Image (cartoon, rainbow, N blue to C red; front, top):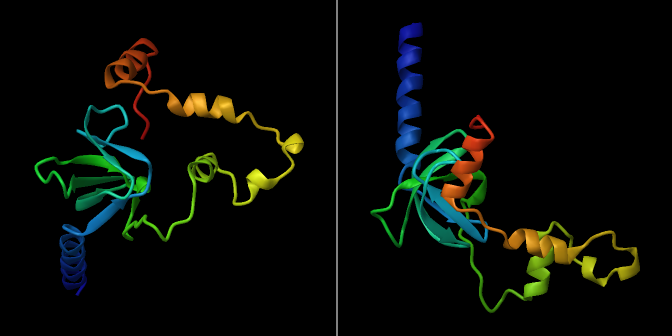
Length: 153
């Protein structure tokens, strides 16, 4: 009896995996690096942008293997937390400005910018500078090697 139950569970999990493969996911961050392997330190093979549609290939823990709809020959890994199952639509019905989006990206709630500026305990200029920093794959690899760091699990 337990052998039949095991086979049924195995068959069901394979069916669920097969059903999920080919589904669409959408980029929910401003810019997302598609990595060669499921690792933050892996080589970046492509970059996709907010709202881009990706085809799901495989999910594995905190990583999802995808292929951009616009470039189906590209296959790589992205952080699952940067994806949405729901299509992201931006258009004329969205009433936001660049400043509002910037504040949201910094973790501030709606209406924050209307508070008395003298009570703010933030330095948005410093946050803007930090957000503008980029590090190449080669620089990241050199830093990891020099610091004798290990890949996070």
